[in-house]
Length: 238
Image (cartoon, rainbow, N blue to C red; front, side, top):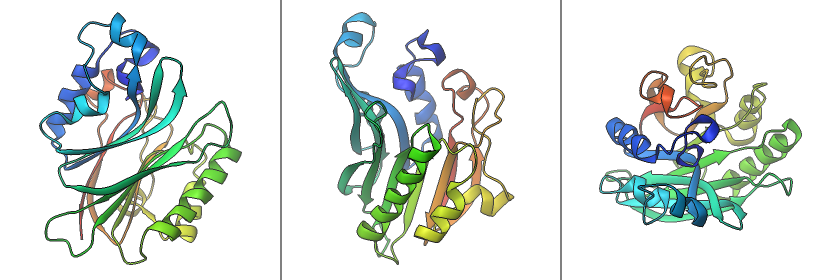
């Protein structure tokens, strides 16, 4: 989300982002760098929403939402968010920060999907910029899954892993039984950054106990002018 601003913070584009997300009409949306509050921006920028950015994005399409506050500063805070057309029975944000200057979290939500015998577990991820920090955070992700997600429950894990060296795949497969959907479908993770000329494979979608189909990178307009990362889209079924 880049906190609702274009690359280099030149334009406030939250309304454009909402329209683009609404056009995809996804049942579940995972977001990173969402502002929960910013008192200075709210007085400076025209058309700043009255409520949090995740509430503004949810609007009337997604009846449920969850937010995990990661970074806190004098003017406000930001973190990960999840929008859902299904009820969220519970959610919890897990602090996986490994450095005082780089706050990171794992937002774990449990969704009641109609006709499914078990709830869907969704973990929204945004990992650190340094490899040694990411390694620790991936271990914490595996520990969270082992502790909080039943072995036979459907699980989706997605977000910005910042894993440009591709080390997460083997660790998550061995430590949590996760499969990356683009690797399964096409043999390689998707190139997502920078969105106009994607080179790095930073953003991922992992599943367990789910059938995944048609994984797609959204790297055309309007996304090329709305974010520095290309969003990912996926269809899943039990």
